[in-house]
Image: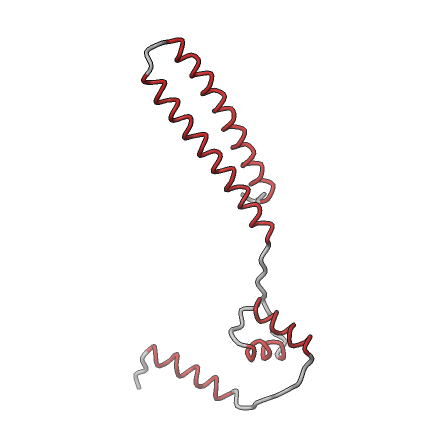
Length: 139
């Protein structure tokens, strides 16, 4: 007998369903039901029935959590990245203008402006590195 892969999967689902022939009903409080609904939302179980079966068989229920502090951190890091980008654009504009000038005195004043921008960029990069090291020490 030759079994195609798609049919094998369907057969295993059917055989699993055949093992689950007994229906069990129970009444629970609103609080207990809400706790089950919350656990289901966080768990990897696709249905309430599978969650309850796992609980009854004392299987480990893995729940996903979302840490909002990382959202705030990512927002701060994105803001710093945008500032660094804006500073980089300014440096490029000054550099192009610098290369178009012939007067050495004007070039000198532009170099001073460029140095200020580079120092500011360095501070922002240092701040970004500090945030990354503080929140992600393994990196």
